[in-house]
Amino acid sequence: MKSYELEPKYGTSQIPGKCLKCLGEHELNNCLLELLGNEEDDDEVKQRFEALVTFLQSAESKKLRDDSEKLMSEGKHVTLRINLDKDTNNQSYELVIE
Image (cartoon, rainbow, N blue to C red):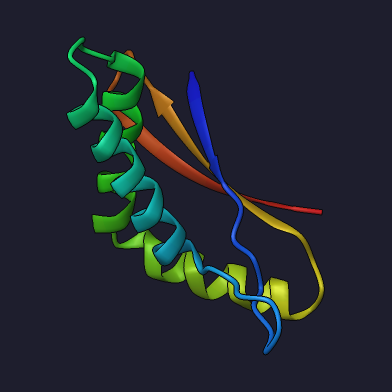
């Protein structure tokens, strides 16, 4: 099982933060730039790109974003783990709280 992680940051007036949606969109743009800049096929970047698109379009993304923002406001460190099962082409999400 392959997994990717997104670590949202809680913003303050002095430190800019990024929610899961903004971070996911930023990573998606990075993947797109990598794919456009590479002349060779990079399956790893393609997989990450597809995983991010699926996450951003999923019904769970809003709930995960709300949950992560609530936890970060309580001072907790949150990481979203996107798990990919290559055999079944299923994707699952897990909030890791520290």
